[in-house]
Length: 413
Image (cartoon, rainbow, N blue to C red; front, side):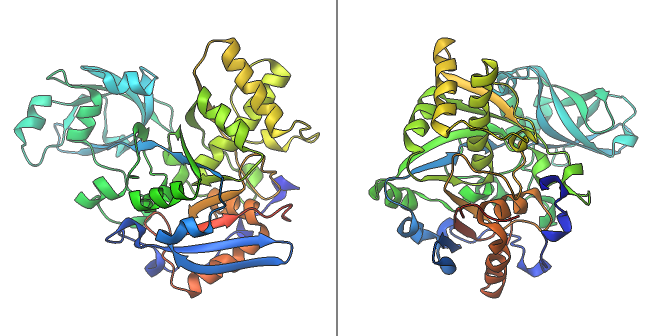
């Protein structure tokens, strides 16, 4: 039944002028749509993001994704003059993000290459139209290692002994969403980044967090809401449209994530009360933790969370606390302070949420897996909610306005 979901049933008309092409002057000047669900019905109200704490339940746990967007777009040039774009996706050698970013002379990345047909295997040099002497000294070069038809492995090499993180900072561009239909500008360096971003690795921002400032954090703390962070590096797959007629034929992208043992213990003690996810990336990570706990119960160790794992026919009899207890026990037994894993989880109508009760998120593209996640969370009332947003002048997508959603119990597909 779930795999029979037609993607055309999860669409709406999004005029071009409703897509926010630039951020507002101040992060928390955005609007906030508050969607609530109760036994008496559902409602939508318009508010301001700077007042979000007024609508959050006291004593809740609020979880943020502290990933940091890297300047992952690099422009190179062949001796013929052809421009080749290399869009870094995730590290290949070393595969660990921190080790890769710390490399001081060479490293390899999985990448999408623009104008690939014109790259004949020769070594590329950085396209430096400014003739900046600092860029010239770095002397960044790229070599094509392999190409599987979908993505490539590219080896980068450079001089001066600086880290690859610094190389990207000097040579790369922030990869803003393609639907903005404009080049990256100076303001994007700061504004396409949450104010609490700490750990480099994403090629797309966890945009639900773009609205927060220290003022909101002070208000949240004053209400007795605990703030915690996880790290899921957002991949370019977040922008991929669903091209298949049925969701069953769509292959979900996978993303790496990491949480600490202390975080798991805090979450375990908090799941009896409200858990608020800031963004769909935090949601995917938090919900994946349940299934990693199931792995520990059934297989003795956590593994990779596959796309359709949540929907097995016999379901899952374990409570969220049981699953988290098993995951915590595994880490302790193996002397681990952090859990590092990947998830391909797809959350669509019919999914049973095991961890989160509230979701802070922006307004998503029609016929996207993110919109399907919203429909799974609040049911078919997503249509009324998006119509309300359209009628009340809300701005859409990454630089657009925000919403606070309360989970609907047992929503219908």
